[in-house]
Each structure stands twice: as C-alpha cells, then as structure tokens.
Length: 279
Image (cartoon, rainbow, N blue to C red; front, side, top):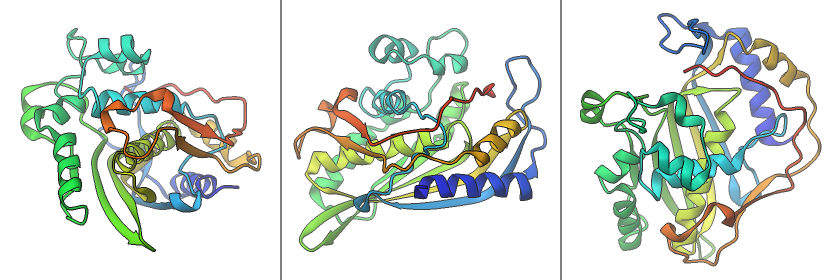
C-alpha cells in the first residue's frame, strides 16, 4: 500500500466515524436534491516527491491527464473559457459550472491568474531571488466574486519555496483548499498541483522537493457512503506510481504540453466507481 493509499483510507475512516454533518448545504445533485455531506476540518498531508512519494491513490483509477490539462488551462492559457477547455483539451466536466450561458465559469481561476499576471510574477520573483518567501498564488479575489457569478475556487492558494541540499536546489510546494470532495477530487487536485510544481521546477532546472497539502473542509457526500465502504475493502496492487515530465531542464513554463507528462507504474484497482457529482 502506498503512502497515498494509507492516507486515503485513514481519511475515509475518520470522516465516516467522526465527521460532522453539513448544514444549509449549497451544492445540489443533478436531480435537484440537496447534496449534504459528512466532513472533518483541517486535513494535512506531506509527500516527499524526491523520494518517490506521490499523492495518487491506487484504490481507483484517477484521470490524471484531464487534471493536467485543467491546470494548463488555468495557469498557461490563463482562461475561464469553456470553449478553450473543450476545443484545445477535450475536457468537458466544467460545463456543469457554466455561468449564465456565457461559455465561461465566471471571473474565476484562469481569469484571476490573467487579471493579476500571477504566473509571470511568480517566475520573475523566483528568477531574481529563489529564496524569497513571497511566492504565493492566490485565486481568492473578493472583487471578482462580487462582480461575477461562478463557483468560488476550491484550490485557491499555492506557495513555492526552495531548499539547497548538497548543491542541488529543490522546489517545494504547498496547496491549500477551502473544500474538497474526498472520494472524487482529492487525488485529482493533488496530482494536478504536483504537475504545476514540476513545471515550475523544470523552468529553472531544479529538482522536485516536497508537496504539502492542506484541506480545510474534507468531505464525503451522502450518496457516496457505499463507494467509501468499497474503497475501504479494496487492497491495492503493489506498485510505485510516479509522474514524470519528459522535457529538458530549463524548458519554458509556457512551452510545456499535456503530452509531456507520463504517469509510470500506475496499476489502479478496477472497476472504476461511479459518483453522482454535487453541483
């Protein structure tokens, strides 16, 4: 069992046994019913990527390619356009969050990155002084929220730091989420932000360091308890999954493509489980 599998099962057990019930829940299922959930507050995990610890479960298949394409849409294209996400990347699952027939998700995610020129500023800061302690990506923009409808960002903050070890520079990253669907989105979000970390590291020719993952509200929806029990019963195939980025060191951040990523030694347990998403 990988470290990610162990943490996954531990969190599922804790939510089911100790979790609190949501009240006045915003999300709805597609049938219109309120999507209530059980949740815990303050979940933290640490993965040492340099030692091969990757935050992806083997207890069910995770669609990592789509997740990576979503990250490029946000941080390379700096876009909120559903047309770009569909036409360029063939990713469709954001359609449920289209805002008022605009073919966008509102002033969210990529639109905020573009508004504040975030990626260019982060790369400039790291180039000028890698040891500065101000490499913060924040997608939490109250002005944008007031001026545009749309789902408020779940993965809203990323921070980067470097360490020198035996002459090599390692890039660490911290992802903070306000809310996370444990069974559906947890490892998708983790791995896509590891991909972002890898892109920044490659841009400078640095090594991958540690990935820290904090979720404030970690939950399981009330129509997912059967799937949660099934995941607890599953025993993973022995493997050591890891993501690689097949481009030379110092490849420009904005030149990296989805097909440059490869997930190796990943042998997830099948069949895939089905989930009715909360919108």
